[in-house]
Amino acid sequence: MKILGVDSSGLVASVAIVEDDNLLAEYTVNYKKTHSQTLLPMLDEIVNMTEQQLEEVDAIAVAAGPGSFTGLRIGAATVKGLGLALEKPIVPVPTVDGLAYQLWGATDYICPLMDARRKQTYTGIYGFEEGRFVVHKEQCAVGIEEILAAVNDLGHPVIFLGDGVSVFAKDIEALCKVPYQFAPAHCNKQSAAAVAALGLQYMQEGKVVSAAEFRPEYLRLSQAERERLEKEQKES
Image 1 (cartoon, rainbow, N blue to C red):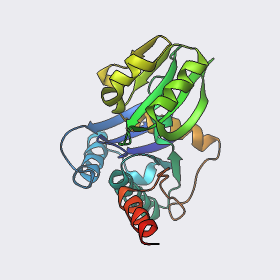
Image 2 (image 1 turned 180 degrees about the vertical axis):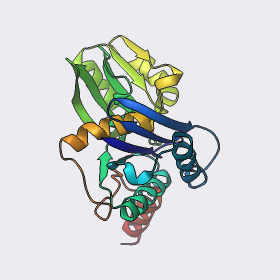
Image 3 (image 1 turned 135 degrees about the horizontal axis):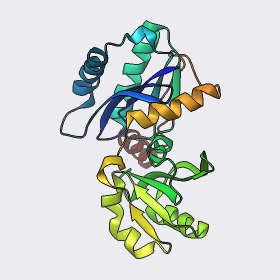
Image 4 (image 1 turned 30 degrees about the vertical axis):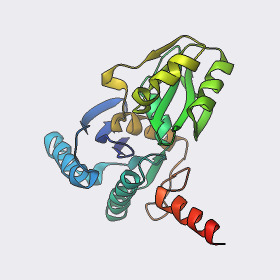
C-alpha cells in the first residue's frame, strides 16, 4: 500500500511518500515561504528523485486541520486537485493526531501544542499502549490553562511538541504539575511522513473520503469571520 502524505497546516510545509512500513521520501521546509510556493515543487522533487508515478499511490493522506486557515486551504486545494485528477481517495488525518504520531512508542503521554493565537492552542493528549495509538483527549481548540489542567488531571509524565511550545513555555513552567519534556528539533513540528504513516492505518480502518467530499476541519472561526460576527452583534 502506497500513500502520499501532505501537511501544510502550520508554518511547516511537508510532503512524503510511504509504502507499507517504508518511508520512500520526505521533503520538509520550515522557512519563510508560502505553501503555495512550496508544496507542488516539493512534491515534484520527491516524485522525480524516487522515480515514482503518482498514479501508483493508493490514497492521499492530508493533515486535515486544525491549523493555519490559509495553509489548510492551500493543502486542501492541492490534495483535492490531485485526488480528482488521479481518481484517488483522501485520508483526512487530524493535524494534532499527526503531530503526536511522530513520537511513536513514547512511554510518556504526548501533548501537541499549536499556537492558535489569543492564548489559545490546538491540542490534544495521546499515548501508546502496546504499540496502539491511543487518544486520551481528542484534538480541540482551548486555552493553554485548560489543556494543562487536563494534563495535570491525568497525572502522567508528558512530552510537549509543536510550534506552541515556545509560545507557552512560561505557562507550562508555571502550571504543569507533572514531569514534562519538550520534544527535540527533529520531531517537534509537522511531518508528512507521520501523516502518511497514520493515514495508512486510518485507510485500513476505512476512514477515507472522496476528493470531492473532502473538507478541512478548522475547529473555530477565522479571524475575519469572528470580526464580522462581532460587527453584526454590535449593529443588532
